[in-house]
Each structure stands twice: as structure tokens, then as C-alpha cells.
Length: 301
Image: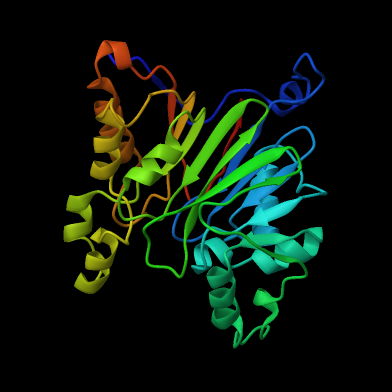
């Protein structure tokens, strides 16, 4: 039998979460996945003193609805927005939200340039979606800090200008978030090691993609080494004890295609891979699937 569990979301209620404290008076590191998929991505990471939004593919009104579904209001303060790459499902609302919270937006310089070009001629509000009050540049391989969170940006293989994943360290925990990558190169696997929380793309089922509605050139793009990670690619990684250390308390399968995947197919593929690991290297955490239309979390570390 597999030595892990699958849940739709952690079971703590909002009031109880607010009462959980470490002995030093701080609250746990908290991760809430607000949206995940090709129609918008956004994840909130919170510590006792710092709040970060990773990707902003969902606008303020919809984001408020997602927070309401988690039993809370839109945060009054966000310290920074981090954008992994320019594709609209990750950047669409970044400028709007950065202005709302008067916070900096972090991205690589090529990503910022592409966002400016993408939204310069937007018919609804020309240039406004690319108007950042406080743009801040980071580079792949760079380590930096925002509040009490240490962040490591690393390059990922995707068909964007300069896409990155992020690994965060806070409160003694490591959180790794990487989606939108065609495969898992060795340097990315290294950045995923020792993570207490791992959010990893499981975009498509290969057979569903092959017989699905996409035009062939789109299917080729998705399956390419700069496309999106398949269930098979995730399973190969999770089953390999030499590269996946089975340390995470939580694994979240993310960025699922609504046309070319199904939550139960992605979950079963990952479960089978984890169950195939040797007992000495067994995964003992919990496995979750993030969805496009409903939030997931919060997870506390």
C-alpha cells in the first residue's frame, strides 16, 4: 500500500489557523494556491511578516472571490509580486495588483520587456497592464531576500523570453514552485531537493493530448522540451529515488490542462510512481491536485 495520502485541501478551518503559533511567537509559513492552469495562475506565500504573490494571472475581483472561498478577505498588504514569465496566464494582472498594493513586481529584465510589448496596444487600457510603479529585476541563479524570505530564482525550459522558477526559504522551511517547463533538467531537480513543499507542473496526459482538440502544431509545442511537463514526466521524477528525495510534506500537482488532462488521471499517475519507490525511500507526505476554478489550501509548514 502507498505510504502517503491524497486530500482535496488541508482541513484546518480559518479560525483555528489564526491561532496556530510557533514558540517564538511567529505564525507558520503558509501557502495558498489561488488559481492554477492555462486560464490564470497565482499563489500566495505568507510568513509572520512577509506576504508574496507568485504570478498574477487572475485579476483583483476574481482574486477576491478566491480568497472568499478560503474564508478570508483580499490581503490588505502584499510585499511583492513575483512573475515567473510573461505569458498572460501568469502576468495578466501583475501591474494592476502591484498598483493596488503599491508593491514592487519582480521579474527578469527580458520578461519585463516582453510584458511591456504584449500590453502596449491593449485596446481596453493601452499600456496600463504593463505600467509598474516599482519594477525590480532579478536574474536566474540570483539569490535575494524580501522581508524574512530568502528567494532563489532558477532558469526553466519554456518557450518564453527568460522564464524562471522560484525556491523560497522561510521559517526553517523550503518551498519550491515550478510550472511551465517542458522537461526537468538536472539543475532544476537540484533546486527541488530538500523542499518541504513542492508545487510541480503535471500539465497533460500524453494520450489525451494526442487525440485531443488542439491543432497539431500546438500539440508539438506542448510536448516539446520548451513546452509543458506531462504526467509521465512527473511520474519518472517522483519514482526516481536518486533525484527525488521524498522529503516534501506536501506535493501539489499544478497547471493541469482542462482539455488534455484530468485531476484523477494526474493523481493516479503520481500515486503509482510514489508507491513504486523502495520502502527505505518511501514518500510519507500528502499529495494534492491544484485546479483552475477553485483555490487550494492553505498549507502550513
